[in-house]
Length: 351
Ligand SMILES: C[S@@+](CC[C@H](N)C(=O)[O-])C[C@H]1O[C@@H](n2cnc3c(N)ncnc32)[C@H](O)[C@@H]1O
Image (cartoon, rainbow, N blue to C red):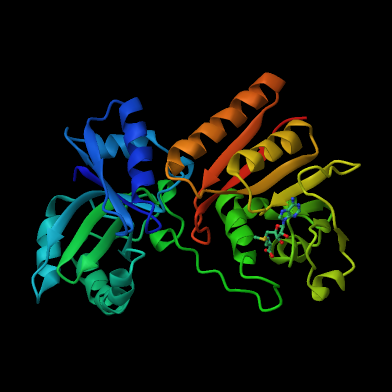
């Protein structure tokens, strides 16, 4: 029970290791992180009893940047047949759980295992319920089984309110056919990730205004328009005609790094491919000067030390807002639809 398993985008195992090791050091949880490039997961192996549980109770999952999902537990080897008996025996010392998710990693092997999991789930669910291990209760921990193969599974626990919202941290969003680009899903996922659903009507309302910097062809603008907002789209490139036809979009062919609105707006979103420090500085200006109340900005990460770079930029933002004496909530996550990048959400609090 003393290993923390963390799912991630393949290629970001090193970032997850750096991030979890930093937190563990700060919280004085002894252990070490390891992750093989390309495997889509990393582990933090705790050297003292209860270490993984302590890490999970001290950390908020949604404050972690690179992990997509996490669970505390251990690896179990499974036989070719009657895997359920072996799992039940392993779970003998576990508390009863409130829900069950069967997960795979975001790798080719993982994709191949999805069918196996689908077939295995129903009989397993039945056996667990019969053994009193699964009670369908949202307050009890979630049982997370991450299959690395048909013969090896990580059997873990996580609190339902302190782990991924979706199995494997992957939202199943449907691409809207009318959207002009696939990156529309990035902004939609950002909203699901950073804004509680019950606040959408208030914080993404049709009485709001938004600015989309680097907007063309309009995938992000589409999301703002879909919420009924009036949008200023900044880009030298062309915007999709379907968006311009809505009458809700004003398209300006100017530089997104120097243009400023005459009146403050509710939302600023930015998906320009630029050095992350420059995009972070843009956030500092827009939120710091009160040009917008909330912002979603992508930080592109073409460099090697990606976790270190993101931490440095987030810290710089925190210091800048502290110096201006303004309260800002800052969140940052590598979303499923993000590639070599992370998405930041900032919200100015108070007046
Ligand atoms: C990744 S694309 C944006 C895609 C858009 N979010 C969508 O969903 O369709 C980046 C855009 O930023 C624009 N861009 C690059 N530098 C810019 C700048 N300095 N000011 C405004 N737009 C810029 C590019 O023309 C390009 O259209």
